[in-house]
Length: 127
Image (cartoon, rainbow, N blue to C red):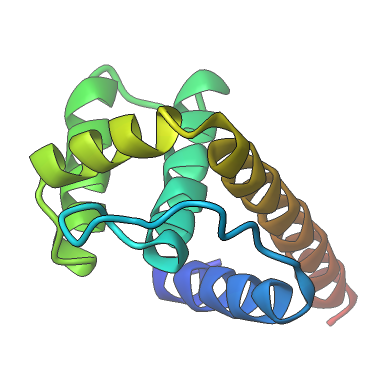
């Protein structure tokens, strides 16, 4: 599946999922921290990037530069610097209940994304 299609599907999954998922709003997120919904999208994509790296799906000797380019593209698309993402990650990590909810939602989004990918591959093979 093309990169843009993956991103569109991922965004759709997260929007759909957030409609029915109760969110914990026990903390006020400071303005300098990436807000919850945006951070969730970014965290989900980070999970994809890291999953590809861990499964060694990048068939190249220059895996590190490819990962750097994926992260650079992610930060650019969300108009967020690497420093802001890392400091936001630290802030969310210091709120374990909220971070647990975010990680659970990201995992659920990835599961839905995987199902949709398998469904699309099956349809493509039937053609």
